[in-house]
Image (tube, rainbow, N blue to C red; front, side):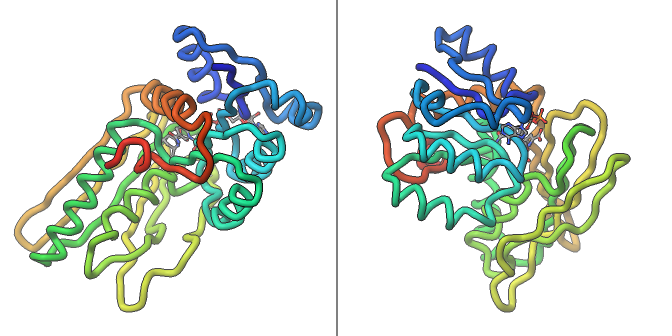
Length: 254
Ligand SMILES: NC(=O)C1=CN([C@@H]2O[C@H](COP(=O)(O)OP(=O)(O)OC[C@H]3O[C@@H](n4cnc5c(N)ncnc54)[C@H](O)[C@@H]3O)[C@@H](O)[C@H]2O)C=CC1
Ligand SMILES: O=C(O)C1=N[C@H](C(=O)O)C[C@H](O)C1
């Protein structure tokens, strides 16, 4: 497949090397420096665009891909407050958008396990959840998109919890804080998320459930960015020829 990289930073580069190794072609590399010089006609030479940029740039890049008629896989986090705008535009244009806060298969299995834990604990009660996410020092926003999705999946079938709140940030570098897109449902408690920034950590997420008598802990540790990049390439191949807005739940049926 012919791929346009919308965002050519850490993720764009890992995707490029895996794509070339798989026999795919990178037809465009777009970053902050050349974004304004790239036209819709340039983008339309690709079968699919893969977008890993910055929270403030993602929606504009999605609109650009929709205008060019190119399906787009979006890994950038921190823009989901605008999902309804993107969904309406995708329908209007008959386009295709695939978004995920985390493309790794392992994280998506972890999400499914968290949802099951939320369901079981709603039945038995007595456990308080907390999420800790740890990322490298170049990550400028808190909390991670993965932690937000994890909170949502844990709360999905829970009687007591809904939404999330940023309960703390430990970072030697300044963080742009992301606000919840919606308020928690009435009479429900938001899941607390703690963000930690520490050198060279690709991405670690811990869901801790504490009762008076014990603790349940579920951890996902990424060893590198390869799992994210592999998943984004699987999504890119899958979305070509489809119409609508999709997530990893559509792809993996988890
Ligand atoms: N969904 C997933 O599985 C994963 C998501 N991410 C997310 O992806 C995003 C990017 O992460 P990294 O590659 O580590 O960041 P990075 O900072 O290394 O790269 C960002 C790139 O975007 C470019 N950029 C900035 N504005 C742009 C614009 N208007 N148009 C096009 N490109 C633009 C920059 O020049 C830079 O090359 C972050 O939001 C991060 O949270 C990161 C890893 C996995
Ligand atoms: O910025 C990162 O690096 C990552 N961002 C994503 C997130 O915000 O959840 C996914 C992964 O954890 C790495």
